[in-house]
Amino acid sequence: MNTITLYGNMTRDPELKQLPGGTSVVGFGIAVNKKYKDSQGNQQEKVMFIDCNCFGKRGEVIAQYFSKGSPILLQGELELQQWEKDGEKRSKHAIYVTDFSFTNASTSGGGGGGSTGGGGGSAPKIDHDDIPFSHGAWDV
Image (cartoon, rainbow, N blue to C red; front, side, top):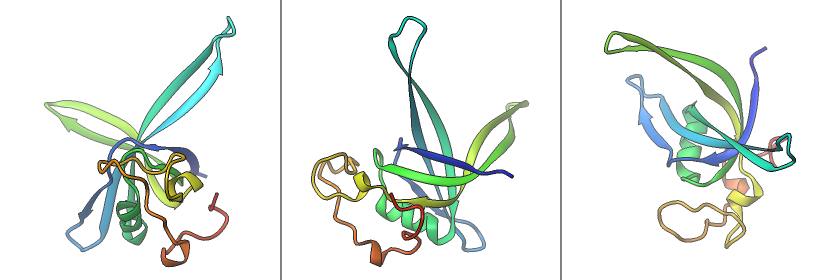
């Protein structure tokens, strides 16, 4: 079984592209924070930066409603991407997103941690009834 669930904030605006066959794909990154106390009892924080890709209609919805700073809850599959650059083999882990959910913070109009993308304004009020794939066990 290859399933991973992550909750984090987008580190950049989603980039929507079309594959030659017409399928949409969106690429974005998220930051996932882990807070813990070290052996001396001091509060510490570790941040993981993770690249994500989502295909089809779900990807289009992410590109439309999310931006840098938006919180997102996602589920997907961990994949190892490998390539060669300048004769050197490289690899990284990324997430193939199979499902996602809006969080209360990403859909609240006004302050309270809404989207803080480039415009500097508050996040728009989003009606979940108008958005495909936004209902079910994933809604937070």
